[in-house]
Every structure is written in structure tokens, then in C-alpha cells.
Length: 389
Image 1 (cartoon, rainbow, N blue to C red):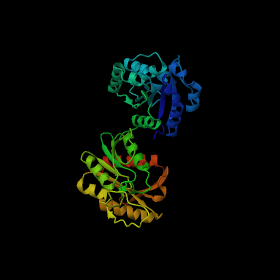
Image 2: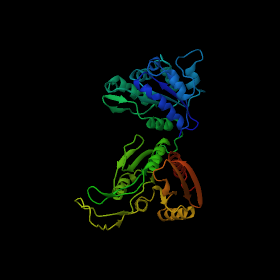
Image 3: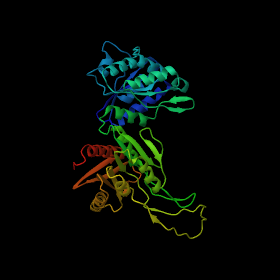
Image 4: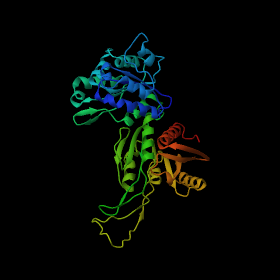
């Protein structure tokens, strides 16, 4: 996600500075090179040696005759993006007023003056975050093109965002955005069909792949709607659903203004008329199953101009059969392409898939996060030139 990206990490004097060692590790785990810059206040909370260890680079704690701010963030500087995390109320105010009395604010002024992407992750007590002057500073920085990773408002504090959320915003700010201006709907995870008020029929899908696709589409610039039975996210507007019928309705609710649908969910193939009361245990029970509508077929018929990407899951372990089933789905539903995979990867972090598009078949092997990026890139190419391939 951040392969080849140079991140200058500005650390100011919030207690959340203690989290920057893990943040630096997470940025590097996604491929970034990281160099840290600190305020004096930050060094009273986290020692520069800790950041040197985390980044494997020297830490800038003062601006010297080497003009470190220009070397990092100047027109021909090292950094591709300047990340301020954590950003205190003091630092936010200084950035908005072009006050350069710390290495972090001086780097910020240079970065803003040279149009290097700037990402800010605020962290402070909630009353400070609500102060009119701080809010005005945040608004001014946003007007100047600064991207924000909203804090978590908990226990009277505006706590620094989770590391994954910060990495996501940095990747979106620093990379190309071929999906900018596009609205992508993604379905993810398992659906559940009620048997009674406490029992359901479901499957083993974790939703990891669908969430990775949604996140990747956001990183590439899209506005994303994630339709699933799962947690809220910072990278997508979430439409909470449970059953196959609810998932279809959830997609319909957003299809009118969408450019594409990526149907990565493992949607129930069958449903049952639920009992209003809990069924008693210890007795024989026969359930009459009814097939659910095929979401991609229904959406394709109702929204013929919508670009649709499908996923096909099989259990045979045979590539020829997987490709044949994927092609059958591709042709029947008129999809842009189909991502085929074996059920053995359900719940795993790593995967192997086959991309089936027209007469071409390409293999992907790697993490589900990397698969998400691959799907988003393929989708961007399809939307850019739908007749290609």
C-alpha cells in the first residue's frame, strides 16, 4: 500500500506520542520509508532513540545549518508526504498561522508551500478539540488541502486515530487516485438467514477480502459504501445488513449514484421462513429452504450501466473447474471480471486467486490486503476504459 513512499513523521507533545513507535512500524510494514521529526515537548514524552529504532533513521530534533526542513519537505526534498501524528492543539494552531518555532511546524510550512501532501492526526483533550480557535485552525488547514485522520472521541479525550486508519489516509494522500470522483459499492462478509429469534444459517466468510477491497478503493480515491454485517470504518460509509435480502436492498439503496459494485460477500444461497418463537431443542426438525435471488444478476438487470465485479468461491481445488464456473458467472451476469478463489482461504490473511476476464486468466498470490489493491486497480482500469480487455 505504501511501497516506495517516503513518510516524514512529525511528532508533537501529546501523550499519544508514545504510540508513534508502533505507528512507524506499521507504516514500514506497508512498505514506507520513515524519518521522524520532533518538537521539544515530544522528546519529553518519547526519547528520540525510540523513534530512531522504530524508523532506522536519524531523528530531527532541531533545525540546524543543514536546513533539515528543506531537505525533508522542500521542492526537491526527500518526503512524499508529511504526517503529523500526534498533532496537538498548539501545533495545529501554529500550522494554520504559519508559526515556525518547532522542527515540526517548520517542516509543515515548507510542505504546505511546496504542495507536498500533509496528513494530520489530532490528539488532545476533547474541550481543546472543541475550542473555536482550534476548530478554525482545522478548517483553515482543510481549506489548504490538508487531510485529517479524525480522532476517537472517548473518555473526554480526542484520542489519536488507530494506526490502520492513519496508514490508510497516508496511502490515499501520497498515492495516485485513479478512482477519484467515483462511487464504489462493496459487499463483504457472510450473510445470515434467521431460523428463529436466536438461530441463523450462515457461512464461514470473515469479510477480510471485502473490507480490503473497500479500503483499497478508498486509497485509490473513491467514495466507498460498504454493505456488510460488520464494524463501522473510517474509509467507507457502512450500510449494516444481515440477510441476503437486506444486502440486496442495501446495494439498491446506493446503486443509482454508484459507478461500480464489487460483490465480494459470501451471500446466502438459501433462506427459510423464520419462526417467531424460539424452536425447542431435542426434537427432529426439517427446514424448508428457498433459494435467494442472485444479487449480481438482479442488480445487473436493474442497473445495466453499473460496472459489476464478482467473486466466485469453489471447493474442488481444481483450477480448470474454478475458471469454468467463473466464466459461467462472468457471461451470465455480464460482469467486468470475476475473481475466483478456493474455499480453503476463508478467514486466512493470505490468498490465491484467479482473475477471469474475457479470454484472459491471471493469477494473484499474496495477502488479502494486496489483493484488495489489485482488485481496485483492475476496477480503475475498467472504469477508465470499459472496452479494454
